[in-house]
Image (cartoon, rainbow, N blue to C red):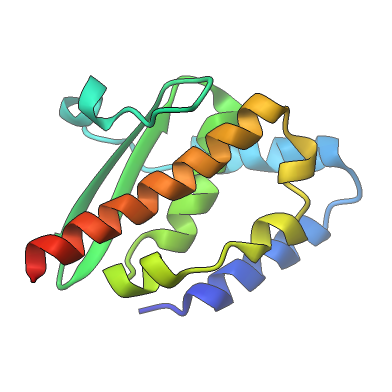
Amino acid sequence: MTDMLAIQDEIVAEFSSFDNWADRYEYMIELGKSLPLIDPKYKVDNNLIKGCQSNVWLHSETNDGKLIFTADSDAILTKGIIAILIRVFSNQDPDSIMEAKTDFIDKIGLKNHLSPIRANGLLSMIKELKMYAVKSKTRSN
């Protein structure tokens, strides 16, 4: 398992290499384009994240006690945001996900550079990722 804090530190370092937010937005869009495709059968209403301005589908599977997330969005920037979150949270055990801090979001200044509606969507994405961990933990107990 890759340490979640190390992944967050990598993301902070990557974002700090850009001089302005236009470049950071472009980078997020590129991250979204590299997001592994979610199986179309998981692009259903039940997997939509509530509270997002755009459609964001999130699916999780368990492999060797770790959650593997796939996602998609119909908005390019939102797809980049969920790609960043999946990079941090995927391939982690449920306890690590539930306890995870998301300070890296503030460190890269993401919340400050999103519209209030998109910032709410970001929080909804994090909440949903953590809810998958809670559900997985509950099923395994």
